[in-house]
Image (cartoon, rainbow, N blue to C red; front, side):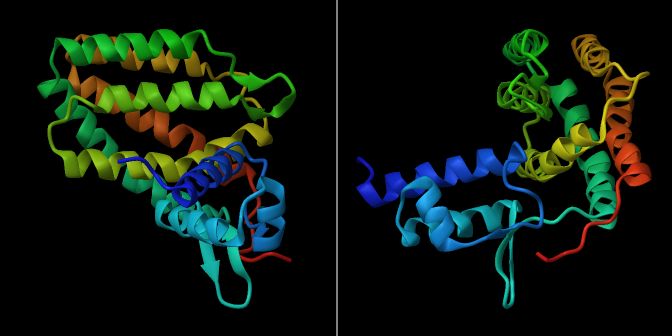
Length: 229
């Protein structure tokens, strides 16, 4: 069955909005007005409304009384809670993945890491933001690491939390580099532990990998108001 024109347009603006939010082109806390979005993406107000409803369900957009729809605001408290949830759930799923994954899972993880290593980190046209291609390769690598887990509910929960964390990852790039941190080496160490089937070490590395960015943001970033000014 083929999709109707309306469904196709809704899918298109959903993907475009999602990419612009995750890339930081639509600022956290910023209002998302139907007429402005319909004009920007050349779609109907109805398609825009449906796309925003999907993004609310994904945690990237929030609805506020009198303000309407906003890009999800960033806050230190939310980041701390999100980080705690990710550390617990994602490390659990990784441990199960290492124990249950087969040879195809290993190959997929190696292939995803190969692509990540060879993808530029920052957008040459906008150095304050991650390159879209790197963000996609990064998500694909971490998804590949978790994909060996046979519990679909846990896997979905871990992936959903990772998606919500993407906004904070973009925010961390705008704060600046950490001279002593080697993100590529962290990814390599994670892959090595996974391929060695060392679940305990892989979980330790992942917990630190997740918490590292959160510590930087909580210590350096100001609290953001939960509304548009």
